[in-house]
Image (cartoon, rainbow, N blue to C red; front, side):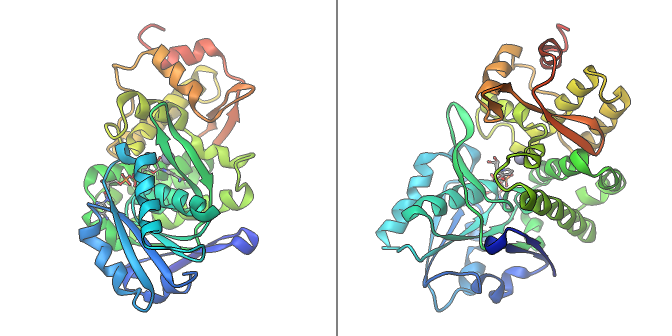
Length: 359
Ligand SMILES: NC(=O)c1ccc[n+]([C@@H]2O[C@H](COP(=O)([O-])OP(=O)(O)OC[C@H]3O[C@@H](n4cnc5c(N)ncnc54)[C@H](O)[C@@H]3O)[C@@H](O)[C@H]2O)c1
Ligand SMILES: [Zn+2]
């Protein structure tokens, strides 16, 4: 087992990464506050792993809630199911929630914990690659609104993150690829060496080679933990983690939540960000191709859905929270391994990226 730390003063917490960690009772138990524990999961993950988590919680007053599965359920009504479970079972302010599942369960559970009785403890047990390398770390929680992705939420850090890499055995290939999008993102924004390592190991990762996967997870969590520790509330460097996401969120909302997976939308979105960077002359066409080749090798789309128009993109991107008072801000590349957040891009070049046929 490897343990990393997200260094946030008295809210610091460990990320444990290894095989068969669900069986190691103490990893979760020692971070539980109070006696009451609610495990939040969904209908797909519950039959696979819920009992194993319940098994290590004996002695606590434990119950569980099983949510419907899918990004299309990441909204206020589903969140309300968690509040209802907490209230019906008379959970008090000293309780602990445990998120068992992918990023959707993690984001909903985290927001329930941030808001229930003005804030209770929660722990993350991520079971998708995407959640293990990204969403379980850093304390961003929330739900979608029909008009915009992740528009309702809060910052609320977990008490620990337990990554049992064996849970990936049951994940399908499409979801594995979606997780690889966020892994590639770390290489693109700040680690050219890691990007190169990914080029060399992409086949092994897609073959689910355990050592390669666990190296990729550890490296990704290390980068995420560093960035979060430096800028918890996204005043600066943390915004780089949104590479490809303003485009990607527009794709997710525009095509209807759940049709394009988050990671797929981010894959295409990162290529769009690279393309726009090249149109400004900040990176070469060869670098765009190199980024696209790795994203394609991960099994991800490298172009937006043809049915989305330039105007639809612009409308949806304006809603995205990276649009500040000063206008739309985008994460763009200055090299493979170096990204910047900027409002200083040429709108006509953005138009060409969104609609290359018309350009
Ligand atoms: N909070 C953050 O910082 C952050 C960062 C990145 C992404 N996100 C959010 O995360 C979400 C995407 O997360 P995701 O990709 O994990 O999607 P997800 O939670 O929908 O999980 C993907 C699918 O895999 C299933 N699943 C989960 N674990 C499994 C397992 N071990 N075996 C078999 N099936 C399993 C799920 O039930 C679901 O059908 C998006 O809503 C995105 O906005 C949040
Ligand atoms: Zn993401």
